[in-house]
Length: 79
Figure 1 (tube, one colour):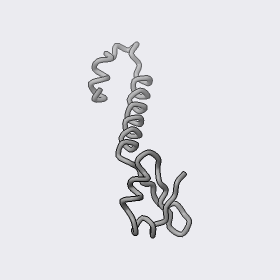
Figure 2 (cartoon, rainbow, N blue to C red):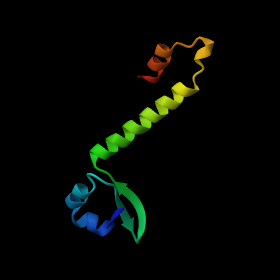
Figure 3 (cartoon, helix red, strand yellow):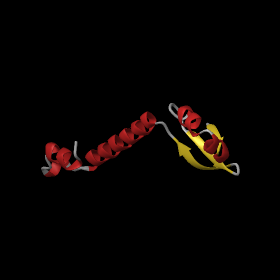
Figure 4 (cartoon, rainbow, N blue to C red):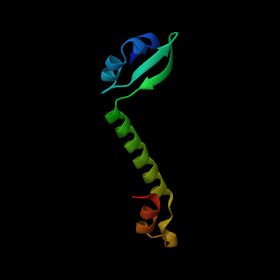
C-alpha cells in the first residue's frame, strides 16, 4: 500500500489526491497509519459494493415461505 506522511500531505495535497485516485493512500503520523485517502470513484465503488452486500444479506434472511412478497421486501430495502 502506498503511504504518505502528514507533512507531505500538507505540503502537496493535490499530488496526494492524484495518487489516491486508483488505490488507497495511507496517511501516516509518526509512522502510524491514521487515515486513508481514497479517490471518489474508488470510494463510490466500495459504498455500492457494501450496500449491495447488505441488501443481498437482507433478502437471504427473509423467509418467503411465510407469504412475504419479494417485491414488498425489495421496496422496503429501497431496491
